[in-house]
Length: 283
View 1 (tube, rainbow, N blue to C red):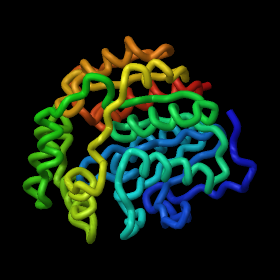
View 2 (view 1 turned 120 degrees about the vertical axis):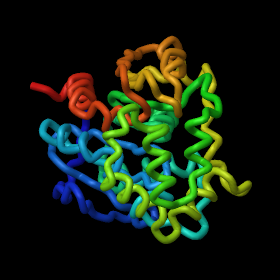
View 3 (view 1 turned 45 degrees about the vertical axis):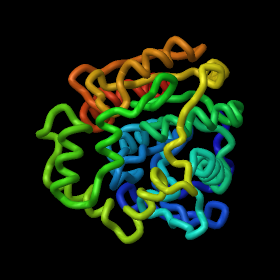
View 4 (view 1 turned 30 degrees about the vertical axis):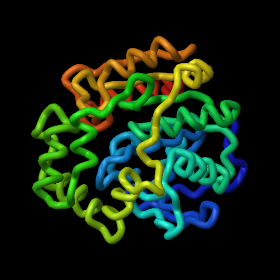
């Protein structure tokens, strides 16, 4: 794998830093050194790179360079007034982020929407990708689920966030602490955040909900791929991962029992061990 030859100054894990990505001020985290691994978050309300990957980033940073950005429209990244949210927009933003850091080749760990972006990147240019980890990612056979409907229907309030996280993200409700609820609620209610969320998935001028993929597109992804899924995922059912396993030419599958859509949080230690081993970072 090729890494950047530019100087690398790790960012603070919690606060991160900002970088200009094709004119968009982009918030990101960059910890550890060595082989670059890029983490892509999902699309739930209040999501950010840190909210999704707070446990995974330090675990991978012990072995490699772990990077995660707030994709345009999410977290602390700028929301340009003229942006048109779509899979293409999000994918181009990620490519621009890699270019801004001078990274020629990376492995990607993508959660939900982040996994779909990773698949689009593979369709764009597989030579710049090493290995893929697709966690709770949509794919062939994906339909609207009750969990996804609940995500899209969310209106910001602490109570609504608690109900959403307990009802559709984690099997064990004890994982949904008051602190986690407050962090996600405040992020979802930050200036411009909910308005952007509504634009992405409901406004006719945007195409954030158009994430379908064909069998032919999937079969063309030849990079080594690990599918990771929670058996009780109510947002993206595990059957989607089973279908993708049959279609991807070079895929493995790891299913966590007693786990929903938040594998990286519900089974953080186990998840981190699995991806570190799969990406060849251990030892």
